[in-house]
Length: 572
Image 1 (cartoon, rainbow, N blue to C red):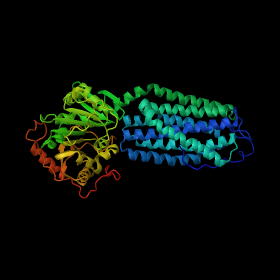
Image 2 (image 1 turned 120 degrees about the vertical axis):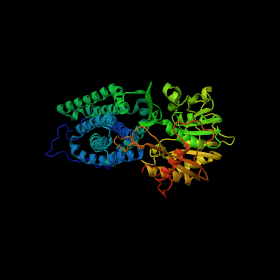
Image 3 (image 1 turned 180 degrees about the horizontal axis):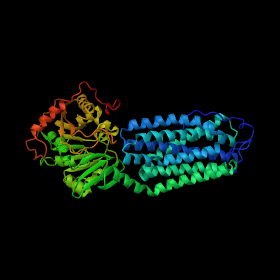
Image 4 (image 1 turned 90 degrees about the vertical axis):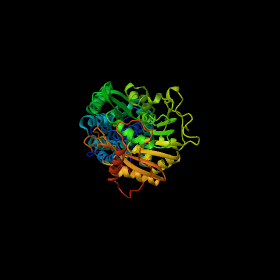
C-alpha cells in the first residue's frame, strides 16, 4: 500500500526530442490491446502489487514479534521505517519515469525477491547470528523504498495508455491500491499464515508479485522495450522466480536446520498450532524442555520448583474447587491434584494444541502425572479474559474431563453452585509479552476477584523481581487496585540459564535464578504458608517461603500505578 502524493507525468519527452531507450515513442504507448483494456490491466496489477506489499509488511511484523518479542514495538518499527522509506522511493522513482516500463519491471522483480526472501533471512539471522533487529530494519527500509517507487511509475504508464486527467488517474490508482491492501491484509492471517506458514507464504507472495509485474511490462508494454531491455527483464524475472521456487522446495529442510540451531539437536516435536509454535526437546532419558513461540516455558530440570511455589501456598484454606488460567501443560494441575479433597479442576487454556500434547506426548504426560486422565480435570479452550467475562464462544477444545471425554466448553461453570472457585492459579506467560498484557490488567483481576468464593485465594506468576522489578511490582500494584490484598514472594532455584523476560534475543539479560509470585485475596493480604495436608514437596518449606517473601520485599518499587486495558504499563 502506498501513501504518498503523486504528481502528473511530464508532458514533454526526454531531452533532445527523441524517445529514451526502452521508453515509448512520442505520441503514446504502442499497445497490443485497446487503451481501456490496457488501463484495466494496469489497475489489476496495482491491486496485486498492493496486496503483496501489505503481506510483506505484515510478514515482517509477525515474524519480528515472534523472533524478538513485544509486538507493539516491532509493528511500530516496521511500519514507521517502511512509510518513511516509501517517501524516499517515491522521490527516487522520478529518475526512472522516462524509462517507466523497464523501471517498473525491475522494481517489481527486486521487490518480489526481497519480500519473498525476507522471512527466510530474518529467521536465519536469528537462528545462526542470534540477532535479527538489523535485518528487520534493513528489509523494512528496502521494501519500503521499492513500494514507494511503484505508484509514480504506474502513474506514468497509465497516462501513456489513457489520456485521462491526472486527478481521475490518481483516484483510480489509489482505489485499486487500497482495495488490494485490504485483500492482502485479510489473506495473510486467514489464508497464507494458517495454510502455508510464514516462510512459504512469503515466498508464494513474492512469486505472485514477480509474475504480475513481469507480465504487465513484457506483454502490455513489450513494444516500448528495446530488445536489450526486454532480454534483461526476462532474465531477471526468471532468475527471481527460480530463486523463490528453489527456496520453496528447500524451505522444510531450512526450517529444520534453523530449529536445530535455535533449540539444539534434541527436537522431538515441532508443531504450528493455530495459536503458536510448540516445540518439545529432550525426553527418552534427557531432560524435557517445552518452548512456546521460541520461549522456554517448561524445563524438567527445575519446573517443580516453580509449580510447587505457585500452587501450594494458595492451597492453604478451602481448595475443593480450583481454576487454572493458562497452564495447558498440566503441571499446575498436577500439583493441585496432589490434594485428595480437591473435587474439580478447570484448566482454561488458549491453545488446544498444548493440551493435546500434554495429554498424548509420553514424556510430557508423564511429567504432568497424567493429569488430564484424572476425571476431576476439565480443559476449556478459551481466552482467559473472555472466559472470566462469561464469553464461552464455540467449543474449539479437544480437552475433556479426564478420560471420560466430556467436552471442554460444556458446563463452563465448574466452581461452586454460584460459579465461584476456592483457588485460582494464574499460570500465564510473562506480563512483558504484549499479547498477555491484558491478562495482567486491573480489569482482568477484577474479573478474577468476582470468580473467587468467600475466603478464596489467587496465585499469580508475575515475572522476576530481580530481572524485572518494575514489571513485578506493577503486577502487585494492579492486584491491589483491583481490591486484593497481596503477599509478594519469590521462588529460587532456577537451573536453566535462559533469557529472562519476553525477549528472545541472545545476549539479553540472563536468567536470574528466580520467579516472582504474588498470593492475593480479596480485601486482606493472605498469610503465606502451607496447608496442614500439604503433600511432601521437593523444594518448598515454610522457612524458605518466609525467606523468599523477605527477599522479594527488598526489591519493592513504591507508588507504581496499576496497569489497565487502555493504559498498559508493562515492558519496563
